[in-house]
Amino acid sequence: MIKKSPKGTKVLRNPTDPISIDRDRSVAGLLEKMESISFQGRNLATAHQLWLSMLSDNCTVFMGLSGALVAGGMRKVVAHLIKNRYIDVLVTTGANMFADLHETLGRHHYIGSPDYDDLELRDMQVERIYDTFGSEVEFREADEWVGSFTNTLDQSRPYSTREFFFLLGRELSEISNEEGILTSAFKAKVPIFCPAIGDSSLGIGIAATRVDRKGQFQFDVIQDIIESAQIVSKSPSTGVLFFGGGSPKNFIQQSGLASSIFKSNIRGHKYGVQCVNEAPYQGGVSGSTFEEAQSWGKMARDAKTITVHCDSTIALPMLATALTQTATKATKQRRKPNFNQARDLGISF
Image (cartoon, rainbow, N blue to C red; front, side, top):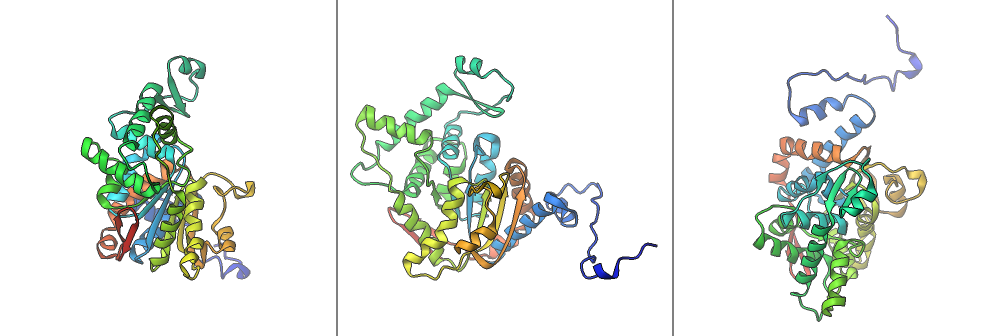
Protein backbone atom coordinates (compact mmCIF):
# COMPACT_ATOMS: atom_id res chain seq x y z
CA MET A 1 0.00 0.00 0.00
CA ILE A 2 1.37 3.42 -1.03
CA LYS A 3 1.30 5.96 1.79
CA LYS A 4 0.69 9.67 1.41
CA SER A 5 3.63 11.97 1.88
CA PRO A 6 3.56 13.38 5.45
CA LYS A 7 4.23 16.84 4.00
CA GLY A 8 1.04 16.72 1.94
CA THR A 9 -1.26 15.34 4.63
CA LYS A 10 -3.03 18.65 5.31
CA VAL A 11 -4.18 19.04 1.69
CA LEU A 12 -4.49 15.42 0.56
CA ARG A 13 -7.69 14.78 2.48
CA ASN A 14 -10.61 14.73 0.04
CA PRO A 15 -10.16 12.27 -2.82
CA THR A 16 -11.95 12.75 -6.11
CA ASP A 17 -14.85 10.36 -6.62
CA PRO A 18 -15.15 9.13 -10.22
CA ILE A 19 -18.69 9.44 -11.54
CA SER A 20 -20.48 6.13 -11.88
CA ILE A 21 -23.23 5.92 -14.49
CA ASP A 22 -26.56 4.73 -13.17
CA ARG A 23 -30.24 5.22 -13.82
CA ASP A 24 -30.52 8.45 -11.85
CA ARG A 25 -32.05 10.80 -14.41
CA SER A 26 -32.02 13.82 -12.10
CA VAL A 27 -29.82 16.64 -13.34
CA ALA A 28 -29.49 17.81 -9.75
CA GLY A 29 -28.32 14.32 -8.83
CA LEU A 30 -25.71 14.41 -11.57
CA LEU A 31 -24.44 17.83 -10.42
CA GLU A 32 -24.20 16.52 -6.87
CA LYS A 33 -21.93 13.75 -8.13
CA MET A 34 -19.90 16.30 -10.04
CA GLU A 35 -19.04 18.09 -6.80
CA SER A 36 -16.46 15.36 -6.27
CA ILE A 37 -14.78 15.49 -9.67
CA SER A 38 -12.46 18.13 -11.16
CA PHE A 39 -12.17 20.98 -13.62
CA GLN A 40 -15.26 22.68 -15.05
CA GLY A 41 -17.53 19.82 -13.98
CA ARG A 42 -16.88 20.64 -10.33
CA ASN A 43 -17.17 24.36 -11.03
CA LEU A 44 -20.60 23.82 -12.60
CA ALA A 45 -21.71 21.85 -9.55
CA THR A 46 -20.44 24.65 -7.30
CA ALA A 47 -22.38 27.18 -9.41
CA HIS A 48 -25.56 25.25 -8.65
CA GLN A 49 -24.87 25.36 -4.93
CA LEU A 50 -24.08 29.09 -4.97
CA TRP A 51 -27.29 29.84 -6.85
CA LEU A 52 -29.18 27.92 -4.18
CA SER A 53 -27.35 29.92 -1.52
CA MET A 54 -28.50 33.17 -3.12
CA LEU A 55 -32.12 32.02 -3.03
CA SER A 56 -31.83 30.74 0.54
CA ASP A 57 -30.13 33.94 1.73
CA ASN A 58 -32.87 36.34 0.57
CA CYS A 59 -30.52 37.97 -1.92
CA THR A 60 -31.79 40.08 -4.76
CA VAL A 61 -30.54 38.04 -7.73
CA PHE A 62 -29.30 39.89 -10.81
CA MET A 63 -28.79 37.97 -14.04
CA GLY A 64 -26.65 39.21 -16.94
CA LEU A 65 -27.35 37.65 -20.33
CA SER A 66 -25.23 38.43 -23.39
CA GLY A 67 -24.28 36.79 -26.64
CA ALA A 68 -26.87 35.35 -29.03
CA LEU A 69 -28.33 33.06 -26.37
CA VAL A 70 -31.99 33.66 -27.18
CA ALA A 71 -31.47 33.01 -30.88
CA GLY A 72 -29.46 29.98 -29.76
CA GLY A 73 -32.42 28.41 -27.94
CA MET A 74 -32.23 29.74 -24.38
CA ARG A 75 -35.43 31.82 -24.52
CA LYS A 76 -37.76 29.50 -22.62
CA VAL A 77 -35.04 28.64 -20.11
CA VAL A 78 -34.72 32.31 -19.15
CA ALA A 79 -38.51 32.72 -19.14
CA HIS A 80 -38.72 29.79 -16.71
CA LEU A 81 -36.17 31.40 -14.39
CA ILE A 82 -38.20 34.61 -14.39
CA LYS A 83 -41.57 32.92 -13.92
CA ASN A 84 -40.34 30.95 -10.92
CA ARG A 85 -38.36 33.90 -9.51
CA TYR A 86 -35.01 32.17 -9.58
CA ILE A 87 -33.86 35.62 -10.68
CA ASP A 88 -35.19 39.04 -9.69
CA VAL A 89 -33.61 41.39 -12.24
CA LEU A 90 -32.52 40.72 -15.82
CA VAL A 91 -29.88 42.79 -17.61
CA THR A 92 -29.37 41.82 -21.23
CA THR A 93 -28.60 42.98 -24.74
CA GLY A 94 -30.93 44.50 -27.30
CA ALA A 95 -30.14 41.58 -29.59
CA ASN A 96 -31.49 39.07 -27.07
CA MET A 97 -34.65 41.09 -26.52
CA PHE A 98 -35.16 41.47 -30.27
CA ALA A 99 -34.79 37.70 -30.71
CA ASP A 100 -37.33 37.14 -27.93
CA LEU A 101 -39.76 39.59 -29.52
CA HIS A 102 -39.23 37.94 -32.92
CA GLU A 103 -40.17 34.50 -31.60
CA THR A 104 -43.03 35.75 -29.42
CA LEU A 105 -44.57 37.23 -32.57
CA GLY A 106 -44.62 33.71 -33.99
CA ARG A 107 -41.40 33.73 -35.98
CA HIS A 108 -38.44 31.38 -35.65
CA HIS A 109 -34.70 30.95 -35.77
CA TYR A 110 -33.55 27.94 -37.73
CA ILE A 111 -30.92 25.21 -37.42
CA GLY A 112 -28.17 26.00 -39.91
CA SER A 113 -24.46 25.41 -40.39
CA PRO A 114 -21.32 27.52 -39.99
CA ASP A 115 -20.03 25.95 -43.21
CA TYR A 116 -22.78 27.23 -45.50
CA ASP A 117 -21.76 29.67 -48.25
CA ASP A 118 -22.44 33.08 -46.71
CA LEU A 119 -22.64 34.85 -50.05
CA GLU A 120 -25.36 32.41 -51.09
CA LEU A 121 -27.13 33.11 -47.80
CA ARG A 122 -26.90 36.83 -48.60
CA ASP A 123 -28.58 36.23 -51.96
CA MET A 124 -31.35 34.24 -50.23
CA GLN A 125 -31.83 36.99 -47.61
CA VAL A 126 -30.85 34.58 -44.85
CA GLU A 127 -28.72 35.86 -41.97
CA ARG A 128 -26.37 33.63 -39.97
CA ILE A 129 -25.46 33.55 -36.29
CA TYR A 130 -22.76 30.88 -36.30
CA ASP A 131 -24.86 27.71 -36.90
CA THR A 132 -28.27 29.39 -36.65
CA PHE A 133 -30.20 31.02 -39.49
CA GLY A 134 -32.86 33.71 -39.62
CA SER A 135 -35.00 35.36 -42.28
CA GLU A 136 -33.94 38.92 -43.09
CA VAL A 137 -37.47 39.65 -44.29
CA GLU A 138 -38.95 38.49 -40.99
CA PHE A 139 -36.34 40.46 -39.01
CA ARG A 140 -37.25 43.64 -40.90
CA GLU A 141 -40.94 43.01 -40.17
CA ALA A 142 -40.08 42.84 -36.46
CA ASP A 143 -38.11 46.10 -36.82
CA GLU A 144 -41.21 47.77 -38.22
CA TRP A 145 -43.40 46.30 -35.46
CA VAL A 146 -41.13 47.76 -32.78
CA GLY A 147 -41.15 51.14 -34.47
CA SER A 148 -44.94 51.13 -34.66
CA PHE A 149 -45.16 50.19 -30.99
CA THR A 150 -42.95 53.08 -29.89
CA ASN A 151 -45.23 55.47 -31.78
CA THR A 152 -48.05 54.49 -29.43
CA LEU A 153 -46.07 55.76 -26.44
CA ASP A 154 -45.86 59.29 -25.10
CA GLN A 155 -43.41 61.13 -27.36
CA SER A 156 -43.02 64.11 -25.02
CA ARG A 157 -40.81 62.34 -22.48
CA PRO A 158 -37.99 59.76 -22.45
CA TYR A 159 -38.38 56.21 -21.14
CA SER A 160 -35.98 54.06 -19.18
CA THR A 161 -35.29 50.76 -20.93
CA ARG A 162 -36.83 49.12 -17.86
CA GLU A 163 -40.18 50.89 -18.33
CA PHE A 164 -40.05 50.34 -22.09
CA PHE A 165 -39.61 46.57 -21.76
CA PHE A 166 -42.37 46.38 -19.16
CA LEU A 167 -44.79 48.09 -21.57
CA LEU A 168 -43.52 45.99 -24.48
CA GLY A 169 -44.11 42.83 -22.44
CA ARG A 170 -47.63 43.99 -21.65
CA GLU A 171 -48.36 44.59 -25.34
CA LEU A 172 -47.03 41.16 -26.33
CA SER A 173 -49.04 39.49 -23.54
CA GLU A 174 -52.21 40.94 -25.05
CA ILE A 175 -51.59 39.88 -28.65
CA SER A 176 -49.66 36.61 -28.38
CA ASN A 177 -50.17 33.29 -26.65
CA GLU A 178 -46.48 32.45 -27.02
CA GLU A 179 -44.67 32.78 -23.70
CA GLY A 180 -41.23 34.35 -23.74
CA ILE A 181 -38.88 36.49 -21.70
CA LEU A 182 -40.70 39.80 -22.16
CA THR A 183 -44.14 38.34 -21.40
CA SER A 184 -42.90 36.36 -18.40
CA ALA A 185 -41.13 39.43 -17.00
CA PHE A 186 -44.28 41.52 -17.40
CA LYS A 187 -46.42 38.96 -15.56
CA ALA A 188 -43.84 38.38 -12.79
CA LYS A 189 -43.05 42.13 -12.57
CA VAL A 190 -39.35 41.40 -13.03
CA PRO A 191 -37.40 44.44 -14.32
CA ILE A 192 -35.40 44.16 -17.52
CA PHE A 193 -32.57 46.61 -18.21
CA CYS A 194 -30.68 46.98 -21.49
CA PRO A 195 -27.68 49.33 -21.18
CA ALA A 196 -26.73 49.14 -24.89
CA ILE A 197 -30.14 49.02 -26.52
CA GLY A 198 -29.03 51.09 -29.50
CA ASP A 199 -26.64 48.31 -30.47
CA SER A 200 -29.43 46.09 -31.82
CA SER A 201 -32.29 45.73 -34.27
CA LEU A 202 -34.52 47.30 -31.63
CA GLY A 203 -32.51 50.49 -32.01
CA ILE A 204 -32.68 50.25 -35.81
CA GLY A 205 -36.46 49.84 -35.77
CA ILE A 206 -36.92 52.85 -33.49
CA ALA A 207 -34.46 54.92 -35.56
CA ALA A 208 -36.35 54.08 -38.77
CA THR A 209 -39.57 55.29 -37.20
CA ARG A 210 -37.94 58.61 -36.31
CA VAL A 211 -36.83 59.10 -39.90
CA ASP A 212 -39.92 57.75 -41.71
CA ARG A 213 -42.71 58.81 -39.38
CA LYS A 214 -41.10 61.69 -37.52
CA GLY A 215 -41.40 59.88 -34.20
CA GLN A 216 -39.61 61.46 -31.28
CA PHE A 217 -39.32 58.48 -28.93
CA GLN A 218 -36.18 58.53 -26.76
CA PHE A 219 -34.54 56.45 -24.04
CA ASP A 220 -33.29 57.74 -20.68
CA VAL A 221 -30.41 55.35 -19.98
CA ILE A 222 -29.32 57.38 -16.94
CA GLN A 223 -32.63 56.50 -15.28
CA ASP A 224 -31.61 52.84 -15.69
CA ILE A 225 -28.46 53.52 -13.67
CA ILE A 226 -30.46 55.26 -10.95
CA GLU A 227 -33.02 52.47 -10.71
CA SER A 228 -30.49 49.63 -10.66
CA ALA A 229 -28.60 51.51 -7.94
CA GLN A 230 -31.83 51.87 -5.96
CA ILE A 231 -32.41 48.13 -6.13
CA VAL A 232 -28.96 47.43 -4.71
CA SER A 233 -29.31 50.17 -2.08
CA LYS A 234 -32.62 48.80 -0.78
CA SER A 235 -31.66 45.10 -0.92
CA PRO A 236 -30.33 43.30 2.19
CA SER A 237 -27.73 41.73 -0.11
CA THR A 238 -27.25 40.94 -3.78
CA GLY A 239 -26.04 38.05 -5.88
CA VAL A 240 -25.02 38.08 -9.54
CA LEU A 241 -25.24 35.53 -12.34
CA PHE A 242 -23.39 36.17 -15.59
CA PHE A 243 -23.97 34.12 -18.71
CA GLY A 244 -21.59 35.85 -21.07
CA GLY A 245 -20.05 39.24 -20.39
CA GLY A 246 -20.21 42.53 -22.23
CA SER A 247 -22.32 45.49 -21.17
CA PRO A 248 -24.83 43.45 -19.08
CA LYS A 249 -22.03 42.17 -16.86
CA ASN A 250 -20.47 45.58 -16.35
CA PHE A 251 -23.84 47.28 -15.79
CA ILE A 252 -24.67 44.85 -12.99
CA GLN A 253 -21.20 45.13 -11.50
CA GLN A 254 -21.33 48.92 -11.43
CA SER A 255 -24.79 49.00 -9.83
CA GLY A 256 -23.16 48.31 -6.47
CA LEU A 257 -20.84 51.27 -6.91
CA ALA A 258 -23.67 53.49 -8.15
CA SER A 259 -25.68 52.73 -5.00
CA SER A 260 -23.37 55.21 -3.26
CA ILE A 261 -25.36 58.07 -4.86
CA PHE A 262 -28.06 57.18 -2.33
CA LYS A 263 -25.54 57.51 0.50
CA SER A 264 -25.36 53.75 0.84
CA ASN A 265 -22.18 52.02 1.86
CA ILE A 266 -20.57 50.19 -1.03
CA ARG A 267 -20.89 46.58 0.09
CA GLY A 268 -20.24 44.73 -3.14
CA HIS A 269 -22.24 41.76 -4.34
CA LYS A 270 -22.28 38.91 -1.84
CA TYR A 271 -22.44 36.02 -4.32
CA GLY A 272 -21.16 35.64 -7.86
CA VAL A 273 -21.52 32.97 -10.53
CA GLN A 274 -20.24 33.49 -14.04
CA CYS A 275 -20.16 31.24 -17.08
CA VAL A 276 -17.66 32.64 -19.58
CA ASN A 277 -15.40 31.60 -22.43
CA GLU A 278 -13.14 34.66 -22.57
CA ALA A 279 -9.79 34.80 -20.78
CA PRO A 280 -8.97 37.51 -18.21
CA TYR A 281 -5.53 38.33 -19.63
CA GLN A 282 -7.18 40.01 -22.65
CA GLY A 283 -8.25 42.82 -20.35
CA GLY A 284 -11.93 42.88 -21.35
CA VAL A 285 -14.79 42.85 -18.86
CA SER A 286 -16.23 39.67 -20.37
CA GLY A 287 -13.36 37.52 -19.13
CA SER A 288 -12.54 39.52 -16.00
CA THR A 289 -12.41 37.67 -12.70
CA PHE A 290 -14.44 38.28 -9.58
CA GLU A 291 -11.15 38.97 -7.81
CA GLU A 292 -10.51 41.87 -10.19
CA ALA A 293 -14.00 43.15 -9.42
CA GLN A 294 -13.10 43.20 -5.71
CA SER A 295 -10.42 45.80 -6.44
CA TRP A 296 -13.23 48.12 -7.57
CA GLY A 297 -15.51 47.24 -4.68
CA LYS A 298 -17.97 45.58 -7.05
CA MET A 299 -17.78 42.29 -5.15
CA ALA A 300 -17.76 42.00 -1.36
CA ARG A 301 -14.47 41.20 0.36
CA ASP A 302 -15.88 37.89 1.56
CA ALA A 303 -17.95 37.17 -1.56
CA LYS A 304 -18.57 33.56 -2.48
CA THR A 305 -17.88 33.14 -6.18
CA ILE A 306 -17.25 30.62 -8.92
CA THR A 307 -16.29 30.94 -12.57
CA VAL A 308 -17.32 28.21 -15.00
CA HIS A 309 -15.44 28.17 -18.30
CA CYS A 310 -18.20 26.66 -20.39
CA ASP A 311 -20.59 27.45 -23.23
CA SER A 312 -23.73 28.96 -21.69
CA THR A 313 -25.95 26.82 -23.93
CA ILE A 314 -24.61 23.85 -21.95
CA ALA A 315 -24.43 25.29 -18.45
CA LEU A 316 -27.64 27.34 -18.33
CA PRO A 317 -30.14 24.54 -19.14
CA MET A 318 -28.41 22.21 -16.69
CA LEU A 319 -28.45 24.74 -13.85
CA ALA A 320 -32.05 25.80 -14.53
CA THR A 321 -33.23 22.20 -14.63
CA ALA A 322 -31.36 21.35 -11.43
CA LEU A 323 -32.99 24.29 -9.62
CA THR A 324 -36.44 22.94 -10.45
CA GLN A 325 -35.41 19.85 -8.48
CA THR A 326 -33.67 21.53 -5.54
CA ALA A 327 -34.92 25.10 -5.04
CA THR A 328 -38.60 24.63 -4.18
CA LYS A 329 -38.15 25.16 -0.44
CA ALA A 330 -35.83 28.14 -0.88
CA THR A 331 -38.13 29.94 -3.32
CA LYS A 332 -41.18 29.46 -1.10
CA GLN A 333 -39.41 30.84 1.96
CA ARG A 334 -37.32 33.60 0.43
CA ARG A 335 -38.05 37.25 0.97
CA LYS A 336 -37.87 38.44 -2.61
CA PRO A 337 -38.12 42.03 -3.81
CA ASN A 338 -41.43 43.28 -5.20
CA PHE A 339 -41.40 45.82 -8.00
CA ASN A 340 -43.98 48.40 -9.01
CA GLN A 341 -43.14 49.10 -12.62
CA ALA A 342 -44.63 52.53 -13.15
CA ARG A 343 -42.76 55.45 -14.72
CA ASP A 344 -40.49 55.33 -11.67
CA LEU A 345 -39.57 51.93 -10.29
CA GLY A 346 -41.00 51.12 -6.87
CA ILE A 347 -39.21 48.54 -4.69
CA SER A 348 -40.40 46.82 -1.53
CA PHE A 349 -39.63 43.64 0.42
